[in-house]
Amino acid sequence: MSETPNDTKVVGGVVLRRDPVREACFRVVHSDAEMQEWPDMSEISRRERLHRHMNNETAAMEIAARCLVDFPETPWELRMSLARQVADESRHTALLFRRLKELGGFKGEFPVANFEWGVTMMLDDLPGRLAVQNRTFEAGLMDILGTMRRRWREAGDSATADLLETILVDEINHVRFANRWIKRLTREDPRVLLKVARAVRFLAQVTEQLAPKPGDLNAVGVAWTEERRLPPAVNIEDRHEAEFTDGEIAEILRQAGFRSIVPATPGG
Amino acid sequence: MGLTIRQKADRIGGFRFVSVFLMETLAKWIPTTPELEAKVLFGRHVWVLAQHADQLGRRTGELRAPAQYSHPPTEGYVRVLETLASSAGTVERVAAFYDAFLPDLERRYREHVAAVDHIDDEPSVRIIEHILFDLARLHQEREAFAAQRPDLALVNAQWPAQIAALAAGEKEVVGERPVAQAAAETA
Image (cartoon, rainbow over all chains, first blue to last red; front, side, top):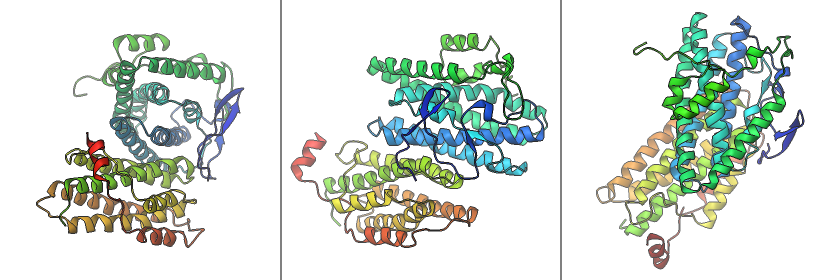
């Protein structure tokens, strides 16, 4: 077992951190083209969604865990938040694995990719990792879950929809503590903002280089259309909960083509 | 046991050091252990150990030491911790942590509670009782892991016993801080 997972790999000309360890039953791939994803809510698509989400939660747990290991001088309150995040992502992994098995799936049924780990772990400072993993990837997950809970419910699977609601609530907390700490650390040392900017720029470069092009096919022959390449509809309500500013949400809306999720009605 | 305030702070700070070290050890193992069920087990317990460290650290702040003060253990005990952290292999890690190291730590917590005046040091006693309650749950979840993965077995059958023996061989977790050092750290 590797004690220091600091090796790198090259994917599409981009240097990324080598993958965390996975069981032999998993086939780890490195690009969207190798993934098996279906746009519908067929049975196999549902299992693949759960399987992919389970692996992403595992990677989120691993990233938060490495932040605890790599930055021992971090203020204790922030380390507590990271430790809580590790446990939350662990629970999410367990919940998704249980649901996957309930739907007849199993570990290794589909390929998995560790893009978030590969990008985030290339950053050697905590503000940068929080900016990319929590403020970007996890905030993006909030947007996706905002839409997907409805799709699962419409597909007649309220158990999975309820599970996604549970995960969404936790993710809001992870994004919020990152927002708070980045603001606090920047107030204490303005140079932190440079680290955040560098991290966000790195993510943008990697995404630009590796994102599938319209017409590209994945491993099951599904084409990437312009619509599928768009960022998900913005979960405005929960981004407010996670303490994004109005200006930040406006910018994210612009990037998403002004598509947003209609906030739930009170009590709804 | 008539402990001075400094001795109380050092012992609680020593337990805090151990809790943080264990939290970091599990965190380090998560990306380097293949089995999903093991990652989940370690991940859930990272938070438990962080809470223990936090509670102990709040208490050090009440004992004329800094809040969240960790007192470094003796050299011998550090060797025990580092050997534990060097465990390789999934079952070696699980068995060394839950079956070998934690029982020794629980014994030390119990001995501390048994030795101190329960009225004089009630806040520390309550924290440790809470920790012992949590650690019992960790053992249950380790058993659940074994039930989930009956296919896994020790490669190095002696490893857990080696960790247990190493831990048992160390009399104390922490040494005494010289008075001048304690005063400087408290100032």
